[in-house]
Image 1 (cartoon, rainbow, N blue to C red):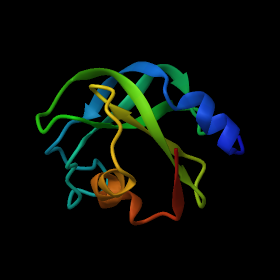
Image 2 (spheres, rainbow, N blue to C red):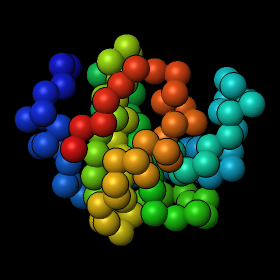
Image 3 (cartoon, rainbow, N blue to C red):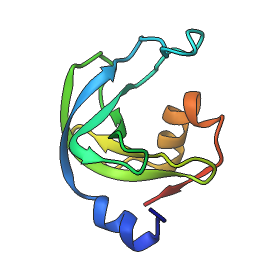
Length: 117
């Protein structure tokens, strides 16, 4: 799927539910030196271009959680990968770009991408 601003705008603002499979403080399964500073999981019932559940960074708590319901406030579009990541706010609050980028940098520093709003 090729992202366009129109497609990102269709997703942004949507309310979604999902499952956290890498809570805050957990380690990446293939890169154990990488610890997750945010809750990371997937959106239930939505599949991405890689054939897997749609990945999501879940912001709005400093505590590990098991599931989430929130609002998609941005999409991190990877330019050098088939995966895009949705950024979900638990309370629906919008966050500044700088705050989102700082939160996802731990993993996205290894990819070229752009934040779509």
